Each structure stands twice: as structure tokens, then as C-alpha cells.
Length: 168
Ligand SMILES: [Cu+2]
Image (cartoon, rainbow, N blue to C red; front, side, top):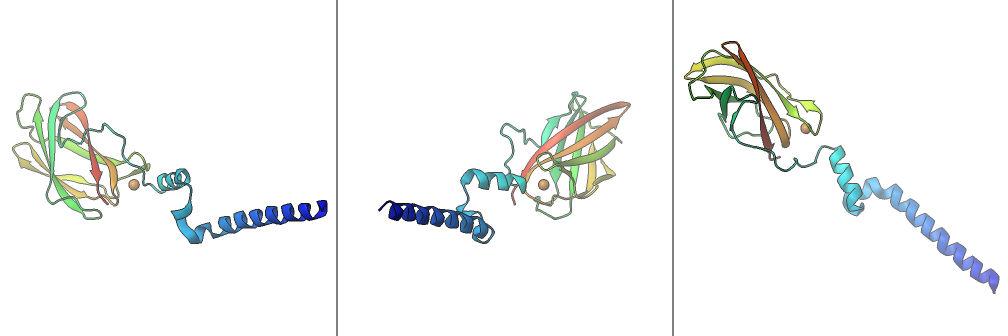
């Protein structure tokens, strides 16, 4: 009698262990569908799927960090993932005068992924009236991007960071 109970317990325990092992072994085949939601979330953030922090300013017109310039950007086309495209950057003084012949450098990346821009965009032309042509813009994935400009004009240097949240 006691022997039989022991046997039953052993069989149940063995079945449980085999089930768990089979589940772990099959996980790569089954995919993340059956994963614990918490684990799936961690996997996603490891692969760069994390969402942007809340409260980011996505304005396309902003004041530079020290208030020296008022800057806005416009993309020539709707921004599409993996498409090289052109921006026009408009730079004004704090009191609204167009800034002529500034020296502008471009930088950026995805803070949550630890990578920069896939290209090295450059301001290639001054278009007049405070407008600057930015060539070589490209984003290779959706999510939160920062695009930073370093602007120097008349011995004044200031920086600005635009936030973008791209679909894709
Ligand atoms: Cu990324």
C-alpha cells in the first residue's frame, strides 16, 4: 500500500519534470507566445523594442539649450525608415532675425539603444533667409531618436536636440 503511493508520487514528479524540461527545450520553437509577459517584455527591450519615455518634447521648433537661437526643422518628405532624405533647418536669433552663414554640425542617435545615426548628415548649403540644407538624414528603425545640432554664428555657439518618435 505504502509502496504504491510512493510509486504514484514518483510518477507524478517525473511527469512534471519532463514537462518542464520539454517546455524549456521547445521554447525557441514555440516562440515568445507562451512566455511569461514579464520575460517577453525583457526580451523585447533587449532587442530594442522599448517605448520612448513619457514627457519628451517632440516640437519641430524650439529654442537652443542656452537660448541663443530659435531653430526649426522640416523634412523634405515624410520621414520613412531607411530612406535617405533632406532636412531644411531654419535658424533665427532669439529676437527673430535670420542667422546667416552659421557653422552647423549634425549628430544624433537612439539613447535607449546606444547607437548613433547610421549616416553622417551634413549641412551642405546655406539657402538664405536663415535656412540651411541638411543632407544625408536617415533613420534605420522606428522608436525614439534624438537629432542634435551644434550651431555657431558670430562667435556664439549653442546646441539643440530634437526628439522624434518614428513609426516602424
Ligand atoms: Cu535603434
